[in-house]
Every structure is written in C-alpha cells, then in structure tokens.
Length: 387
Ligand code: GDD
Ligand code: MN
Image: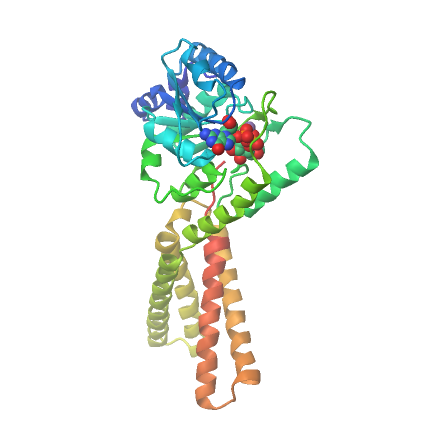
C-alpha cells in the first residue's frame, strides 16, 4: 500500500467520517523502543525513522527506554542532533515489558508504537499501521505470519517451532496470527484504559490485547530481519516466564461468570417461552406432540436470538445462520450429555428410586447446560479477531 496521502486513504476506509479520519491519521506517533545494549543499532534506527519522517510526513517522536546499558547508548542519542529523539535511562524494575509500559506512559503523542531496536522491525510500516488504527482497528501488529509476511531464511527450525508453539498456546486468548510480535501500534487512550497491566517477560502485545480487551486487531505483513549487531536477549529463562504470563492471562480472560449468568437467565426465559407456546398451541386445538414440538422450536429460536443479542453480543456482526446451526448443534450436544450423565448416575452411582432419578436428572441438566454453554461460548459465539 502506498501512503502518499494517508488522510484520503483513511477517509475511504471509514466512508462518511472524513473529518475523523483526517484527525486520526495526522495524529503524531510516539515510537517506544526498549533497549538493552544496542549502541550499534541506535544510530541506524534513528536514521531509518528520520527518513520515514521526511518521506511520509509522519510526525514522530522516538524514545529509547534503556535499562542502564552503560555502553554509550545515552551518548549516541545525545549526539544525534534531533530534538524528536530521546533516551530514558531506567534503573529500577528492569525488563523489556516494564520498559515499554513506562515508555508508553511518558510518551506525549496519541498513537503509540513499540518496536525492537535491532532493525528486525521495519519502521516504514508505521504509516500503514497508523492507517489501520484510523480505520477503526484497536491495535495493529506488524506480523510475520500473515500473507506477505516473512522471516529471514536463517531462522532455524527450532526458533520457528518455538515461535509457533508459543503462538498456539496463546490461541484461546487471541486469533491474531503473530501475537508474539514486538512491533505494534495502538491508541494512547486505549492504553490508558488497560487494567492491571502485569506483564512477565516479553509478550507485551499479548498482554495489551488481553488486558485492553481488544477484539479488533489488525495485522500488517512485515519482513522480520535478523539482527546484524548485538545479540538477542530472549533467553530460555525469558521463554519460561511466558508460561507464567499465559497462566495469568488465562485467569484474567476466563472470568466467565458473567457470560454464564446471562446464559442461564436466557435459559430460564426459554423455559417460560416454551411453556407459553405449548399452552397457546394446545388452546388452538393442536395435539400434544405438535404443541410440545412447537414449544421447543420457538424457545430454541428465542434463546438463540437472546443469546446472540445479549449474552454473546460481541459476536452480533457475524453470520446468524451459521451461528444458529451451531447453537442447535451445541444444544444437541448438551442434551446428549444430559441424557448420558443421568443414565450413568442411575446405573452406576445411585439407585432407581424416585428421588435418585430426580437427582440424576438434575445433575444431567447441570452438566448438559455447562456443555451447551461452553460450546456456545467458545465455538459458536467465540471471540474472533479481525485480521
Ligand atoms: N529496556 C530493556 N530492558 N530492553 C530490553 C530488555 C530489557 O531487559 N531485554 C531486551 N530488550 C530490548 C532489546 O534491546 C530489543 O530492542 C528488544 O527489547 C527486543 O529484544 P531482542 O533481544 O531483540 O528480542 P528478540 O529479537 O529475540 O525477540 C523479538 O522477537 C520476539 C518474537 O520472535 C522481540 O520483538 C520480542 O518482543 C518478540 O516477542
Ligand atoms: Mn529483536
């Protein structure tokens, strides 16, 4: 994509609201670069960003967040001769993610970008990323794994596998294809909304996706170049921290109580609808089988509509027909589980007295509903992130 006139492009993307698009795109950018012992790379990155500023007209400040590298990085920035570049020396709470978060906090512009210092991430993609934000995306990631994205050839099999496995483990949290990326853009006001930021390790983008509740994350393909100068700081120890990070994110994300509650309320309403329809059909003189079937069909439809509208409202913009089929399938699974659990309890755990049958049946209903809920929550109405 060429971006000679970014405001026009953005205006196209969001149609009517040209004024908004213009404001969004001309918003200046703060580029935050966590650095540790990157003295050779700092002048090279400054030059790339200088060129970007002059070629694309993007107004950008560049802030290096350095964890006391003491390798001449501070001097390199001081001598660069640009007032839009600065370096912050950190002495406490060392680490890549805390450095990025501190950088976002002190940044002065409404669009925040994070990138590595080692030239793995092409700053030339920043206008395209900002454009994604102005077209409504909440975060835009520079991605290796979308069509058009790539990595240098000498990425060994294990590094590739490692990255893929890490991405797979994050899958229930986001469908973004490269959530491990350290190159991303977001709005300052969304960052300010993030609750309980507590990243362990390297995966700051993933942390923000989950904690800010981003549902609309865009990906811009990038070529990820291997660093030429210095070494990667992504040690095995850092990678193990990822497991700890994932655990926290899973706990944060899957506080499902509210969804379950809404689902149960809809289910209870469904019982009422079912009985009302049944009564009406009997009143109109239909036979009991037809009336029961009518009650079921109508209540399944109203349950579906209510769940789609309220319980899982985030999925409202997706194909309702597919969702309806999924909903019916999930209900069928729920019924099967209900039946099997009830029978199992009567056969092997309880006896077949009247009380036991009721207990078994209630247990069956509870597990059936749980399966029904999980099927709807994680399959039929799963959260999906737009690419
Ligand atoms: N301030 C600070 N403190 N910066 C750090 C620290 C730290 O403790 N550790 C690393 N950095 C800086 C590096 O100087 C570099 O600019 C950036 O953070 C990323 O570190 P690298 O050492 O270059 O990591 P990588 O290239 O192996 O990992 C990259 O790819 C991963 C995906 O494969 C990064 O982009 C990761 O964020 C990404 O997850
Ligand atoms: Mn790197």
